[in-house]
Image (cartoon, rainbow, N blue to C red; front, side):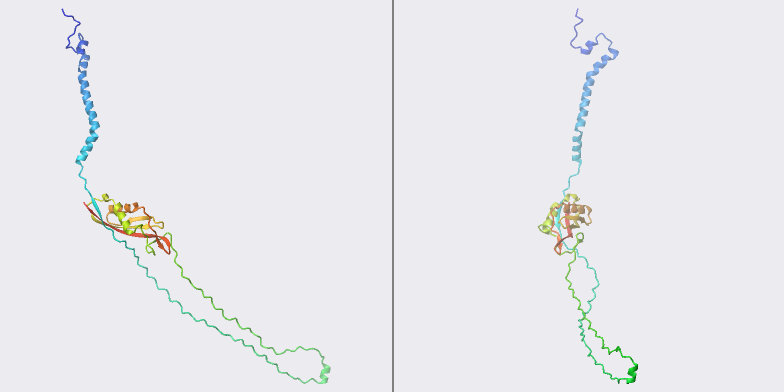
Length: 280
């Protein structure tokens, strides 16, 4: 008779634990299905983790494969025209009135005429008779003589007016006005060709699409009294080209030699035509 406590080697742990018990209760079936559910859950969880971890790389790979090929834009500096001075039409001014004719100074000669004194004639009167003299009382009588004409001194000679000499006065130079005509124009270190080269080297052609062809603009800026650049503007027809041209001019930090009038530094407006060719 075989020993009842000896179990077959083919029995599982669940079968040994639930031997002689109610296996239909549910616990046996739950423990029996547990290894298979655990394996399935592990596989599903590992798959979800791999998908979450690899999704960025998969997205970048798909994006890199679907994006259009890059188009290289070739930008060549065609020509920068020589700077032309802005010539403003002078305002028509009325000619000044002709100066009045210079009158010759007249010197009036005044002769001092002293009248000669005239001797009064002596009037002889006969003495009164003695009878008349006895009746009259003698005394002193005032007698008016002949008055000589009053002497009038000559008037002083007319004083000659002091002649004032007018010296040429140079016009005052304004510190705030922007001039377009000066005696000495503003200059870039190394000359205008050096400035053109810096503009061509600093221009970023990637800002353009590449199919514009020949693009033109005119850049104006103010060279301040200290040599710095302000008020940079571009008035071409292509807004992208204008923006990049303004950025390029502002990026050049070299200071200019300011323009001068009467030896004094003044603000000067500089004009620079710019032409470039873009080929796709």
